[in-house]
Image: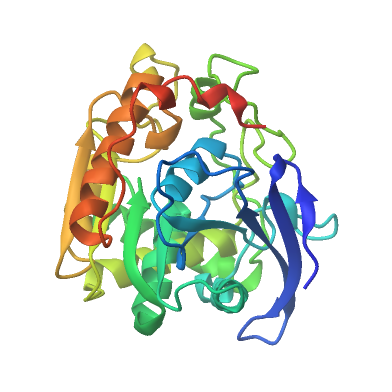
Amino acid sequence: MEWQQDILGDEFESHAFLAAGPDGVERTATLVRFRPAAVTLPSPPPRGRAVLFLHGWSDYFFNIDLARFWSSAGYDFYALDMHNHGRSLRPDFPGGYVANLEDYDAEINAACHLINQEGGDPSLTVMGHSTGGLVAVLWASRHPDKVSRLVLNSPWLEMHGSSLVRRAASSMVGPVARFRPEAVLRLPERGFYWRTISSSADGEWSLDDRYRPPMAFPVRAGWLSAVLAGHTKVARGLDIEVPILVLLSRGSANGLFWSEEMRRRDAVLDVNVIAARALTLGRTVTVERIDGALHDVFLSPAAVRADAYARLARWLRAYGDGGPQPPGAGNEGMGREAR
């Protein structure tokens, strides 16, 4: 297996590979690993534990701070840029598109195999953000032997409003998805969340607009139908046995026009609906609501993300074989390093 230096710099490497989905189609995915140049802890924790991060839709892995947090906790950190996203984008394929969320299983399974080959724990901690959180819980429900705990950062578990909205959307999108799955749906474009995180606008994170476009990738009928089908499975209950942590903002700020509240709330999801739906995931679910958090709680302003990291550290001490101490003030100025 050949690793290349990654776009994030010397401490990161990436490996692109092909994985065949249930339909037999081979798709490109890219596994990223963090290899810190030096261990700064007084006594390095034992290695062998590993965490795999799954990004959201129209997104990719770039959060260096997140990798450092998990590494300091004693985990080998990996992230997967899934097919048609980020490092795995190919010019002849539509960005962000998937027709069935189970198509991701092959590349997640392959990533698990690669991690295990490197000496990682065969039972991973899996962390998912937004749509990646939805993918993570569905994958975990189908592969319970491969996951030891789930950490979900604003997982997209349900549509805005209620299941009634989902059913109405499914009835409208379904016929188009069956006959023209790659048809682009005419929906309002909103770049408000991007505005709050990108250093090109009002945020502090350096984003590659090829991988994380300001207005996101076009919404296609087949993709939306796949997401709605995933929401339906979550609503029926997944009965996941492993401990689950769900991190959410305390409030949402959804709308067609810019609002200053979008700087301190989730501008993408209805967090109250997500919090309620999270309880259908399994037997041991912890929901943390974080004041001032953005859609990705770990891209929030420094004091807010420090709170999020502290809550994650506390949960890991209970459910993660010891886990780290809460990060101190040293984490508060790290966001601008991401590239």
